[in-house]
Image 1: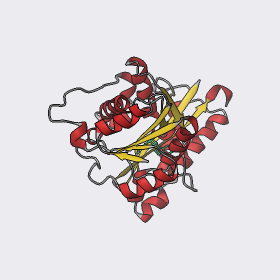
Image 2: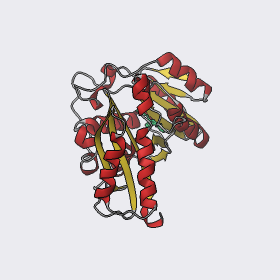
Image 3: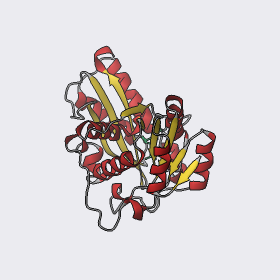
Image 4: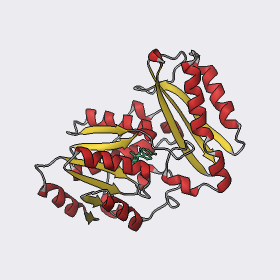
Length: 282
Ligand code: AMP
């Protein structure tokens, strides 16, 4: 496994193996089983796998947790080596964003609702760094997690719009034993916050069950989600949403494929989760 913190070195490794298929998993590090599920899928489906570890400053707003985001590169590298990863790209922010940096990628409509409403600059930061990483690694396939559903949609749109020559693969959300979606941020939860956190997925599951039982009124379901999460007094809902899974437009009457999603604050930690349900066959 080669670790490259230099853009030219990472490129050179990639170009040494230009005839082979390369899978790529972009991450912000502090790896867990969710990340590793993407890595394993990439190792299975490609002759070579590259992983990037970069806590991208431009996708954090000034009041967010960039400084406090957990980091442990040595531990991450041990985990990746065990999985058979070929290249780990660990760039420094100053080489990614040089002093005269002035180009960004903004995916318009699908960046606006949900996460985009709460974090208006987030997806421009994400799209720009992912575009740069795609240009550096030139992967055959790139792997993303369903946990960040809107991120996958934004990236797919960017790939279509800008003609990136690669395939996007979205992998299922990996969860803790009690349903909490794995996230690097979970380690920052206090014991009490961690105990309250499973309400997020439980609420998503109960909402899906109500839809399966025939409920189609989105306002009633959104009200239910609010109330269900509020059972945990520590939890503060940022948003609850029932949206079309492709366009992310909020629904009034459910039909088609529906993204049930939420963002919840537990103390200072903001967690997101979602499930997708095909209403017509539910
Ligand atoms: P991050 O390091 O949080 O930027 O995540 C890197 C990639 O891992 C993204 O594509 C995430 O969607 C994905 N990911 C994070 N958590 C999970 C999870 N619990 N299950 C599956 N994929 C995940």
